[in-house]
Length: 545
Image (tube, rainbow, N blue to C red):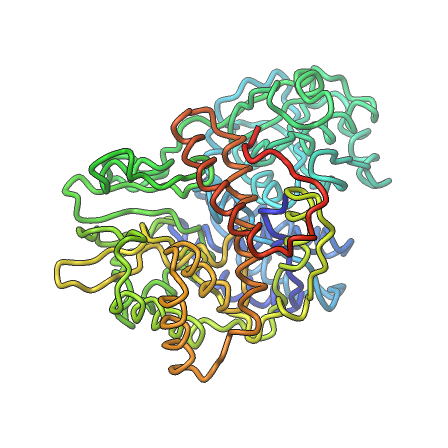
């Protein structure tokens, strides 16, 4: 099923380079500004390499200089780097970029790879590093800097495996093949985050190196975790992965010092609900890293390094200024500190007139304040068709015009009752409202009807409450969503059933699996009610595997 959306967007190459140049003028030897500049350089290098642009090598030198500065504390030769940027003349008009997921969502600090490279055993004094684009671009530069600090002769390239996510293939260009041949005898280090569900990107690069004549014993994968080979979805994944050595980073030490306990992976629920029977479901592996301060007054949540986190910080500040959420108090090293709000969490049984007004007014606010202009949204129609086919075996006729956003907006995306807290003064506050609408899941920037549909489904609004809620929204905006709402209700239910089904299949803890299966069945029933009776050709199991 489609749960993760295509996150690559087209952007002006000249604008990317100009933005990087501006960041270089403000950096020092440490801190968030340096890290932001490094991530920006890696993004530009990756985008130009994907476009086959020769200037990728010039930007690669910038990435290397910034990585060296971060890892080794070396002096930044700004004049030489600026010359590299100003001499970039072979830029295409537009390039494709996408957020590096580890830096954006999973608190993967690049220095963890420097720590790994600094201590891993390497018999050869010569190393050849291959970064898997996109995030492997930046990570490979960091590994090179750490190996140079050990006195190891090292150089790097980056590659982009292609094909189905479970069946990636890597084919070296003539120039890359010559590079591999030139480095025969070196220790080959393949660098990326992950592995993901399949491990096929890593495997494909390793196998491409073997085809190019590199001995398997000289190839190692540098990963963010040690996978269970038997769980990899690539064809013969366990056997193929085991052909190569693996080194993985250890526990993340680049975290807020003022923290206790770990709130991630759904751990926050035991501090919010009096009984486990009240717990909402969650997909633990996909939750952001979270911590509560020792005095229980602040929540630290990872929102993204560099500009990614800055955008979330600004959105949450705007939400707070409008009176809809808690005011964030600090942003450092990818983590935002929020006040911990004590109060009763929302529940479908607590629907009231004042709550409906609050939900509608929040949707009004987002529809007006978080517009994304001309950004092309992910195809909800494609997701809807795919998930209905996978779940019900139907070839649904989807009117794509009904799912084209009236105005592309960064929606909340999580209108669930448990994300609303009623404070001591009776005011309903939306927590966690800054990042979900712009992460790697559907929907991305879309019509506010997604949040309207989410509120109706998640709060289980009856027809009368739904009418009151929508009328409040229409009266304040002049926008009547009635005609497009059925399509968004179905799309929302189709996404959520796919999300919960995939999550249930990936967790091993019995109670979590049961909660996810419960929610999957609820969303499935909702989607089934919205489909015409004659649409069903095949009925499938109502329990995830």
